[in-house]
Each structure stands twice: as structure tokens, then as C-alpha cells.
Amino acid sequence: MAERIGREAQRRHFTCRVTAMDSYSIVNLVHEQLVIFVCATTGQGDPPDNMRNFWRFIFRRQLPQNSLCQMDYAVLGLGDSSYAKFNFVAKKLHKRLQHLGANPIQSPALGDDQHDLGPDAVLEPWLNELWDKVVSLYPHPPGVTTISDLIMLPPKFSLRFLDKQETTWIAPERESGADPPTELQPLHALLVTNQRVTAQEHFQDVRLIEFDISESGINFAPGDVVMIQPQNSPKDVQEFCSLLRLDPDSTFILQPQDPDVPAPPHLPQPCSVQHLVERYLDIRSVPRRSFFRLLSYFSPDEQEREKLQEFGSAAGQEELYAYCNRPRRTTLEVLVDFPHTTSSIPADYLLELIPRIRPRAFSIASSMQVNPNKLQILMAVVQYKTRLHEVRRGLCSSWLASIAPEDGKRVPLWVKKGNLKFPGDPDTPLVMVGPGTGVAPFHSVIQERAALAISGNILFFGCRGKNNDFYYEEEWGDLEKRGLLRLFTAFSRDQEDKIYVQHRIRENGAYLWGLISGRQAYIYIAGNAKSMPTQVTDALKSVFQSEGQMSALEAAQYLTMLEKSGRFQSETWS
Image (tube, rainbow, N blue to C red; front, side, top):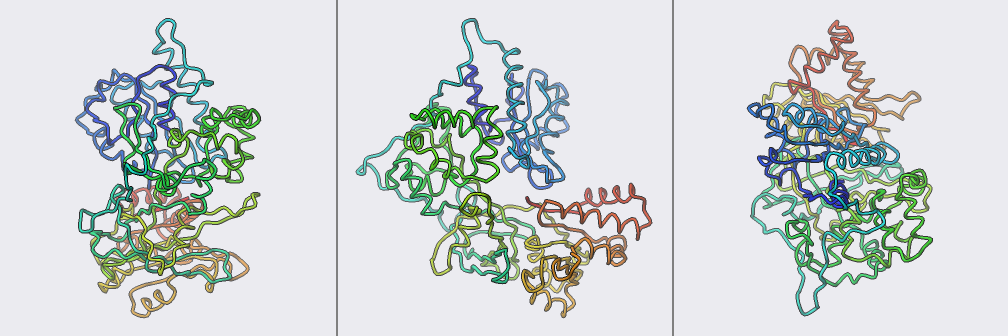
């Protein structure tokens, strides 16, 4: 989105730099005239990783209240309304910039991934209004006009292909024994276990996957997250290269057109086409409107060009939704549908046309205390039907599920601090609500505490059926016998009336209230962000009312107090 705004600024003859927030020297902000901030929200209202240093600086109390009085700005938020703190970072940044004297050009845009058209639904009209205001504030010199949308801008990078004699390309590998793995220097970990943990007849395929992390320098604690960098399948890579008439064995050097613009750090130099398509271009993503707009420039076929221009226009949004968003049609499938255009795409535009494959985050399900050389995740394989003939498949989960331990395949990964923080005092009880794969981080902490003979572990686990998807059943039973776990289960489909974890919370209200009010227990929720977190928090508030003799308002305030003190935490995903 930021790159797109940069291109639109170029059309209006602005000198524009697009930079990650933590790559920008924030002390220079006082000298900037006009800044557009594009930011996502992560976790429970937290800034993304590459914004954390910026965030800490901008909220320093000693910053003068008029320090940004020379700066005009606008904030564009990218969020997901299924989360409680929807676009929290964008809203908070907007308020803080105003507090420091900056001048907002217009109200923040709050893009929503849950909308049928994704964030574009909000962003398209917002950007049109923004540019009208920007051009009126900073008018063009006489005789200069905005570059028409009919004219294609030059590419940001050019791919200089090398002769076979010029180079032998070797995929970069991280040196073992170096610093802990990072996104740019991941550990290529051996996948050693890939076990289906749901019944064969159950509709959902869930895997327990284990990686060998011995001698990697990786350290993790319960609540931490492993980031996994997925790859496109050999079949998709071959099809893409064939459609675009690219030789996967050819190598190139990426050359920025602007010397001040660095090449993407995730791509090695030189790089093979195979590496670019397999590990960088997200050809399985559902393309956005800007993709169709850019694609239309390359089309030598009038019929294809008209259709692409329609999908890329404001008027064609309903048609685009029906063709692309609703059936979850992928970039690769779109390219197949427009063969004349696809075979005419210049390689120089690939990085602007197709986004980078993003790493996927998984809660770590194992404890280093118990097994320091292994890292486990509990992963649902994403697959579902739409009106398209081919089943829709999640890129990362399908790729990992396809790897057999005997293949000797390695998976790029690194570890990040998670949002869940567990208390150091072993006498503090933990109340954990983890239906489905949401149980993963709780398996990690329970495993660790059990190894240290720490009791006070209370788990509310929910799934569809005792015989279908009851993860870690034997392990939980053993820990219960040893007095190290109190387990409450909700098997929603094993009886006529559906029973969920929130029902078990209400049934055991007196017991829970004793732990929370009498023993200062911590409460945790992990799982799907759709409706479960709201239903569980409602159940907790009803316990506070019935057992703690509180009004509805007091119960809500009590939950807020628990959250602020770190005694109520959640990790949810959509």
C-alpha cells in the first residue's frame, strides 16, 4: 500500500521516499513537510515489529507539544475488524501526532480485511480525497499537470539477466553457530515429525509438526511464536514460468532505477528466477485492484485490456468481487485467464505486480525445558471449497503438510517473542481457555510447569468430538492423575445441544472466582478471533457478576483492570 501511494505521489511530481518506519531516522521528522503513515496493528493493539523503535520514540513524554507543527500528515490503517482492537495503532498514532502539533490533512483511513473488497473498500475513496487535498495544499507549478493513469510509470527495479558464464548462483544459507536466526538469516530447520492428530474421517486435517533446532542458537519461552517462511509448490512455479516464458535456471541482478532505493533485502544478489518465483513472489495470493490496473498496461489484446481496466476501476468493483475476492481466485489463476497479457509482462515489473510471500506465525506448542532440541507446532491444514473447481489451499499449511520427514527437507524459520506473558511466581494459578489449535501455547506452558512439578494449571479445552480432535488427550489424562492439571472439556458435537468452553466457564463460576479473587490467578485465551473471544469474555463477566456480586458495569471494569495489570491476556487470529 505504501509503495502504491509512492507511485501515485510520483504521478503528481512529488519527490517521494517510501521507507519502513524503523529504517527512517525519526529525528528528521521535525523537518518533513508532508508524511503519509501506513500502519498495521498486531497482537492486542501492538505496533508491528518494524515500527517498535519509532513507536517508543514518538511516545516519549519529554517531546515538546509543538515539535511537529510544520508537518502535514495523514494516517492510513490496515486492520481486521474481527479483532477487539481494530486499527488501534493507526488511531493512537493519529492522536499522538496531533498532540505533537502536526496538522492532519484528513481523518485516518481504517482499512478492514473483513470487508468483501478488503481494505480497498475504504482506501480507494480515501486516497482520491487525499490527493485532491494534497494538490490544493501543494499546487503544481504553472504548466505542470498530474501524469495520466493511462501512462505507465517506469519500473522501480530492472532485472539484468546474466550470461551462464557470468555466475554460478547458490542459494544463501545461514552459518550455524552464528547469532540467533532472524527473518533475513533464518534457520533452515529439518522437519522431523509430521503427524496427523485428527481422526482420518474428521473433516479437519490438523498436524503436529516438529523441527530439529539443535545447535541453532534458538531460545524460546512459553507464549513465544515461530515464524515460518513458506514456498510455492514446484507445480505452481513451473506453471508461472511457463506462462511468462521465463527460464527458471536463468539468473539476474536487481538494479534499482533510483540509487537511493535499496533492493529488497529478502532477495539474494545475484538471484535465480527459480528462487524469485518459489520463495519470493506470492503467486497464490488473491490479487488486489491495483494488480489489475498495472496488468492492463501490458496487454496487447484489446478484449483482455478492457476487462482488466474494468476490474481496476472504481466502477468495476462488484465485478471484481464476483470474479476474484468471493471465489478467492489466486494471482496465478488470473494470469491463466489472461494469456495474451501474461505472456507480455516485462520481468522488470514483477516485483511491483506481485507482493512478497509473507512469513506465517505459529504459537510454539512445546517447552525447551522438556526438549531443548525440538520445536513443535499444532497446525490446521487450510483447505475449503468455493465455486471454483479447484479446492482453495493455504500456502504455508499445504506446503508443510506435504513434507515427509524422510524427505530431509529444511524449512526456513525464526522465533519471535509472543504476546502471552506468564508469571514467574510458581504459586500463581493459570486459567487457560484454548479451544482447537488455540491450545498450542498452553501445551507449551503446561508441559514446562509440569516438568518443574508446578501445579495450579487449569485448562478449558473445546473441540468438536472426543474421538475426532481431542489434542494431547493422553498427556492431559496423565497430568490430571499426577495432580498437575485440572481439565474442563467441551465437545460441541458429541450431544444434541452444542456445548462450548464458555458454557463450562459459567458452570464452574464459583471455582474460577475463587482462583481469580482469592489466589490472584492469571487468565489466558487463545484461538480463533471470530466469535470465541467475545463469548468467553462475556462468560467471565457473568461469573464476576454472579460470584463477585458485581453489576454489569463493575464486571466490565474488573475485566479491564485484569487486562491492564497483565492478568487477562489473549492471543487470537482470524
